[in-house]
Length: 273
Length: 359
Image 1 (tube, rainbow over the protein chains, first blue to last red):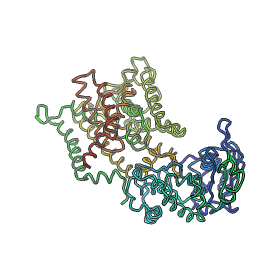
Image 2 (image 1 turned 60 degrees about the vertical axis):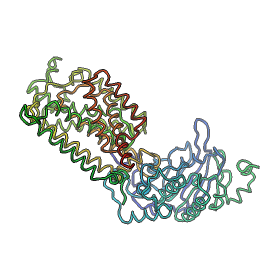
Image 3 (image 1 turned 45 degrees about the horizontal axis):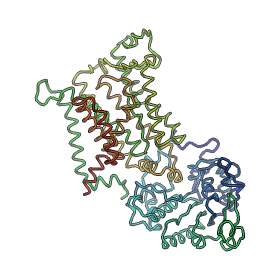
Image 4 (image 1 turned 90 degrees about the vertical axis):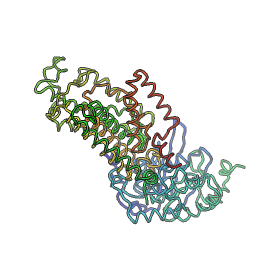
């Protein structure tokens, strides 16, 4: 009764839970995320319109596009918050995202960072990371859970990576905006997801923090796949090898930043003349 | 190294001081029933009235603690906890009525000229089954209600309104004579419990001690929960449910667990309340009672374990005095109290004490 209530036809084993994520996800075809012909309409308004997107294993992909292009809706579809009206969404080769709940998708290995930094404000930085850590997240397991040495080491390691070691015992609500952004990124790292979705990760960061974030993401690519939605073109230029431009719910152009910046249609709708 | 902020904070404020006050309070509570056994006219004798009053407040304190688990920790404001309390009370009341009626039917059924017991009264002459009902009735209702409410992601004020409606519906149902629970008179005129005379001083003393034991047990349970990862997940749920879901936790199971636990605690408190106070009727399910419980928690301090106990004690202490001194003004006073606490003491009395401690 208290176990996560799974949708019919997709039991725990069917979605590869209980296995280490890296091995659990079937990525034989080299794509971690496959979106085909995805459409989402809200009362007739098409937020996404026959969108196709493929993200390779270990790739760092940036998604850019003007306001209302469907970037956040795209993230909602991938994380199960919004169901597509039509189309297919696959995580790896076998997991059908359109039939999984948000929690199942998170457990299967997709992590998401929100546009507004969202951390557990009443808990300490350390506790935030503890909760995010990859572990059995059922009710019963949480009642008896204690951190072991390995888990503590992992938390310390991430604290070091996000430069919050000295603030470990501080209440997360007291952190600065930039620190909260890093904490949220740290929580994603603790989850150790296969695919990270990052919605405007450097919004409100200082230049130094932005530069540090760029280094961090470049270090993550390869081990993880990243999809970054960002407006800051300087930041996009510093991290992305591959950029996708969204416009009115579809992919307008794809390629390196130079390529898309040179694309006439892109200049017209987004970069402006 | 890694401890919840609450624990760290109390440690800084002086664990010895907290422990000393707690131990003193516990000693007083244990002494009260013993003093009540002293012969009449003895200078130190505690009257039956005082013992019943304090016992009643202790039952309320358990309700406050149970409510705080769902409101203070998980952020679910229930305005219907009186229903669970009353259900536990009614379950115990059924046993007491059977015990008082002997082999016959409870008196109110005779008045309705019923010739046999309704099916749901079956087995209530056994104390053990009544105890099961004390847990099962509120527990199952909470389970079913919680399952659908949390599945539909009902939260915030909508959740509060639904719990309020639930307890109101319960009250209307129990008001009907046909429901088989004594209508608006409820259950009263109990005689004995497990063969012991219910008004005897020694029975009262034992019931009182059981209430203290339940309170201490609930407090320990709450403390263990608050310190566990489960407690931290609840806090996280309260502050950022979406974040928690994307961390891979299913909030429904966590909410349901704490919700049912809280309902069962209320049921147990109700079961101890009825034999001490000697009456249970549908007014216990009235929405105002449940709102009052929320005031206790808010006044004492949400999200702390001691706060609700303080709140229940303070408000009920004031109520007993007020309803004797200025009976018609109590509700105004309660309302004013709620407004004052909301405006000036968002963290309740405990928050105020902590602030003092830090300065």
